[in-house]
Image 1: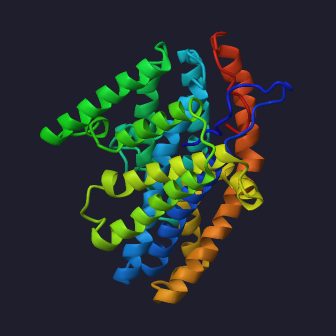
Image 2: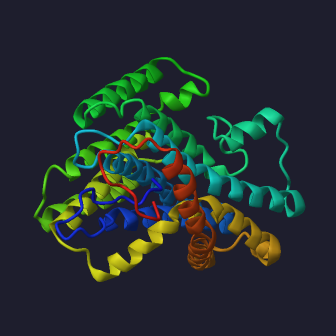
Length: 370
């Protein structure tokens, strides 16, 4: 979800591997959709029911994220090789990518809420659970943090199968996740087992299969990619027209189109370079993680420091202001990434990942900003 995927083999000219720009672009689109949804909801307070229903499709960005995460983890851990990177290296990379910037953002939320918001009424156990992203507590400080519990569960599960060949690893993980979801349909669980048996985890597996296929099958038809991506977009729209996403199983309603969308963009890029506009826009994917983390804080600050008296807005103003707000927050996130997150990641990779990793790696995967 938050890694910059790289083509795994160096070219004959020995140059550094190139990023998969289509995934970078989709990371930005998914994050921006979530930000736009939350911005419009905050400005309108949900009083325009039809408008709120359609903007809520922005929450489908989470499903795109999960599919992307599966692709990235498979692609950066195995590439086209027959062995994955070391388990220690994998876990260290995941830790430095997820937690340090998350903790910084948590601090910002706490400072704001304690001084200008409603504060946090959490027990010690809930504080610890939120900071460590335990299922059931991960949304206590940063609301969208609930998705990170799914990410961590997938990472930990993937770490257990890295010793296997890629196809065997994928088959095993697919079998375990599918069986756990089936058990979850039969037996209702509390956390953390609820996360471990939720059908959402299958979206990671679907993305991982795309990662396996991507370096082993060469698509040369841009038309195929466009057809897949267009089918995904169409399913998002048609599905929401005829099926109420507030009551439908979202793994089917939004998960399946997300898989088609990601597969389509990957196929488009395999068939040839992306259009220049998409190549430039793909750089916004670098800051998608921090954008996802800070956007609720930015919305809250905007409402608290000057816009509170404007809400709830009428339909059209809420759309226009939400769009402007989402663009501004995107800019803030890009600056945050460039000034804080990117330098911190470089330092952590050099002083933590490289220093404490096992020397065994079978694929080349490093390139900031991963």
